[in-house]
Amino acid sequence: MDFNVKKLATGAGVFFTRAVQFTEEKLGQAEKTELNPHLENLITRADCTKNWTEKILRQTEVLLQPNPSARLEEFIYDKLDKKLPSRTTNPELLGQYMLEAAKDFGPATPYGSTLITVGEYQKRLGGAERELLQTSAAGFLTPLRNFLEGDWRTISKERRLLENRRLDLDICKARLKKGKLAEAKAAAAPDFQETRPRNYVLSASASALLSEEVDKAEHELRVAQTEFDRQAEVTRLLLEGISSTHLNHLRCLQDFAEAQATYYAQCHHYMQDLQRELNKCANAVSAPHPTAAVCPDPVSSAFLSGPSSPGATVSSQSSQRPGTLAMEQTQLPVTGTRKAKVLYDYDAHDVSELSLLADELITVYTVPGMDPDWLIGERGNQKGKVPVTYLELLS
Image (tube, rainbow, N blue to C red; front, side, top):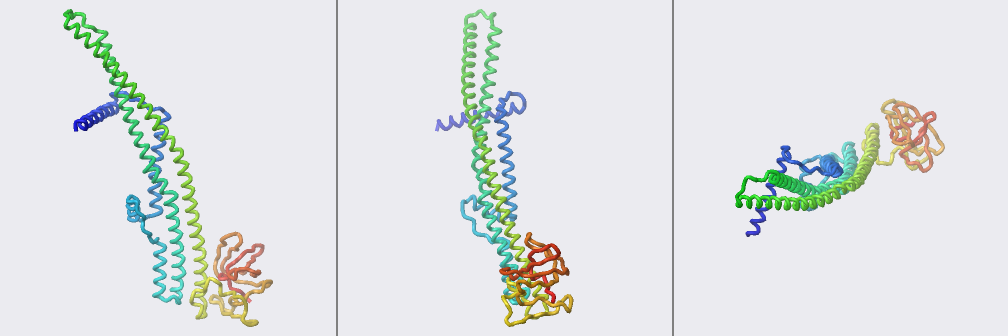
């Protein structure tokens, strides 16, 4: 018990002495040992890395999970070291609602069939978002957290030790300086007027005591300087490791950007497919034939594998211009070409496709092995694939 009390008293004394030294330094009443410029630069760089890493981490979490309650739940599970339950993404939930609504409205109705189509694509978008969240959490967020909760805590601990060693060093310097001043003052102005033997002995004892105090202060200063240098070296090595941290975060950042690129590419691909499906639905709904009210299958109804009998074609009047013939339901001959009227504007998605403008006339034909949903369209010197659902074949 006595040992613990003494240790506590010693620790409190050291803390108080350091506090006094720190306060006097702030007030300009005490000298402060400056760190090596290289070490100061490393400390500044480390602080900058820590601050920006925290900001990037927080904002990335907001980007990937805008819901604060969900982020809090993820934080709690992470601190408890438990696996986070699987959570349905917003697109997946929207797609599920659409599919359930389609059952009530009737899957065979135009609205119900469109709800089914859009709902399925929403679920695909939700799956892509889930994959992005998982990839980003493992490849980007986790390394940033590991740095802040692991490496940075170690660096902070060693920096606090370095600051304490510096304060101890400055305390020893101040103590030695005071001792030398007292010793010099006593040596410069001896009390020669005092002739009594008793006072002479006391004066000699005081000088010896001052000299002993100076020797002790010099020894403590050497020890404090050694400990400070050792701690400065340890701190320097840790701070120089920030360069490796930057390289690691660079690789993680590249992986995060690649995951985002993959996610947005998937979303773009899904939305292109969905747009084509909706255009087919729009064509089917606008057709005057009663059986064409439901969205067609992904395979276009305009071109089948072949006629059931020679000359078996189906034509109808256009809803916009009566008198023009609709698309035939027979496969165009490989070498045959004919005119077609463009029903809607169409932007080419790549160099193999041809952009279209509504109401213009182009020449179209097919080639062996080509997707029946597409034709080759020509406009002057321009040529490329065009979707069948955007065309009305003319006689």
